[in-house]
Image (cartoon, rainbow, N blue to C red; front, side):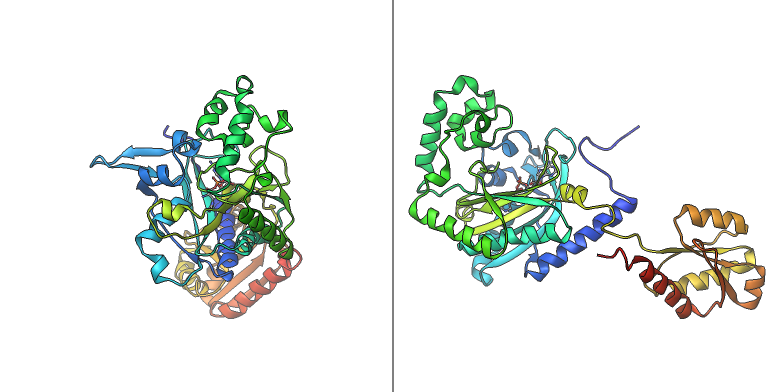
Length: 426
Ligand code: HAM
């Protein structure tokens, strides 16, 4: 039997419906905040991610789905969205052609060759937002607030962890401090971290394998080593977050797994326990546009893992719509049922017809199995009199309507539906 590729999931039925609703809600929230959709291709030249995300990151070194295409071009399936959006931002001259700040969002699949487990997949989905052309800490605060707005809409209990990882001016000296600090502790570090001392010492701070932050309590932190302007930026960020009512916890060990960040870095974790609970992360990346060959453009953004968000949304957040089903009990009733189905299709109710004539008992069983709450029946007598029988499967109540009284029927259904869900609707 051929099964799905490891770490990649199918989505169907009620879960697909809930997922679709979740995406609709997210789009509405971010579009209200004036973000517009931005779509980029799944495949990019691998050089983009090497330069953008960073040669020494796990994402580039271990997790890339990359291959040579038929002409021998080395391409990769996007592991994240920021580098692609920056590539497109430069390619389309957006800095010159659009008013700044330029605010965009994306929703779509991303690919990382990681060890699959709950909340970690090889094909996963993100909501991302990016804001170009604004260096203010207030915009960072708005960006973080937007992530919180999404989580609050879905009634998720979460914590925001924020940090500043400095800039080109102050980070090199801090980096040296870390190298010096960890060099004497090399033999107590995991194999990856021993290499990281030379390649990417900041990543030692959030290593989950040898976990230095749990062992050593005097590790130098970036927030004590910021230059004047980064320090002011961080203070103003904290102030703006307070105004937005975002309770950020200052966490000097948030360093992020991607190399492009400057100053603000943050992660949001859900308060549910579990090891894969970072539901969103992001920060400022003021050098990325120029590093990839574009004009000097400050930028900030985040991405949220949609599988992780989906798992956090409570089962009763979305109510199931009312379903009704139509059946013909004899051959003479089939055309009437076709007419009825056509008329019902113009209305905002969930209705399906089963055109194969069947006995009443069988129709009842099928309607029940399909989760229908109302059933419409056209038997021999109804066909003769141009009537249709409506049966409420919860109460057993029956009503006879003329086949053309579709508006009356739809009103009954809508009234019933709104009464049913008024207690639970969010
Ligand atoms: P990231 O932290 O690598 O950041 O990913 C953001 C979120 O995507 C994570 O917090 C997590 O919820 C989800 N995620 C990541 N990998 C997986 C996976 N294998 N399976 C399921 N969910 C996953 C970025 O991607 C940056 N581009 C964010 C950003 C945007 N920074 C600035 N702008």
